[in-house]
Length: 366
Ligand code: CP
Image (tube, rainbow, N blue to C red; front, side, top):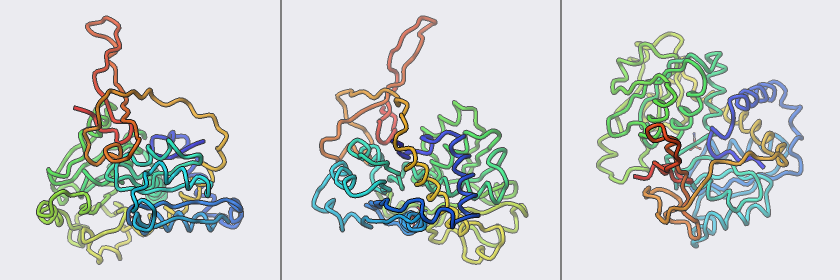
C-alpha cells in the first residue's frame, strides 16, 4: 500500500509518470470517466480548504467514484476529543482512500499507523502540502516546458508556507534549478530545508527585495502570509503586507516570467495582475484537479505493491520539542525519531547517533 505524505515519497521517475498520466487525462477525460466506479474517497479536513478538498472530490467524481467526509474538525468527533488515529481507523472501514488535512505538523504520519487504506497528506500545519506541489509541477511543465534549469523566486511567508517547503523539496531533485528565497527576515525558510539545499549543493540565495529579484526570474511563486500560524497578532499585522505584487512590479519582470500562487490570496497579488497573461494561478487550480486524478489512480492501482522499508525509527524517552507537532497532543502516539549517525570518527568506523529528527514533524531535536 502506498501513501503520499511528503513529495519525496515519489521518485523523480514517478513524478514524471504522474505528469504523463495527467496529460493523457487532460486530453482524453472520457477514457477515465469510469475508472474508479465502486470506489470511495474520504476527505477528512480538520482545517479549512476550498481548492484542495473540492478538487479531490471533483477528481473522484470525474473518475466515476464516490466521496464522503467532513469539512471542519467541529463537524467530526474530533470535537469530542477523538484522536487522529481512531478517526482514520474508523474511516478506513468506509472508504478506499483518504485525503486528510490537519493543522498539526506530522498528523498524516500518525494517521498511517492506523489506516488500512492509502492516506494522502492534503496539508499538515506549516509542514508539507505534496498535492499542491503536483499542481505546481504541472503548471511549470506546461507553462515553462521544463522542470530543470529554472530560476524560481519564492516570495512571502517561507517559514509557515507548506506549499513552499514541498515545492523546494521537489524541484531540488531536478538539475540546474536555482531558488531565490524572498522573505522578511522573520519568515525565512526553516533551517532544516536550508541545510538540505546546502548538503545537496542546490543553488539558492536568500533576499528581501522583490523589486530587485523579479527582473531575472523564470517563475515567481507568491505566497500568503499565514495568519493562522502566528502566535502573535501584532507580529502578523506588522508583516502581513510585506510584499504586494502589482502592475508596476510586473513591468520590471521578464516577458516570459510566470506568476504562480497556491491560493487563497489575500492582498499579496493585486487583482489587476490577473489580466496579465503571465498570471498562472487559476491555471494551477485546474492542473491541481487533473494531477489529483492521476494520483488517486496511481495509489489505488498499487495496493498490493511491496513497500521498501523506510528509515529506522527509534524511541529516545523524550518528546518532540515542536509545540505544533501532532505527537504533543495525540493520545497513545509514541514519540519516534530518526537518528542520523556519524559513520566515522577520525577515520575509525562507528555509528554514534549525532542528531535526531522527529518521525512525525521532521524537526531536528536540539
Ligand atoms: N492551495 C490550497 O491548499 O488551497 P486551499 O487551502 O483552498 O485548499
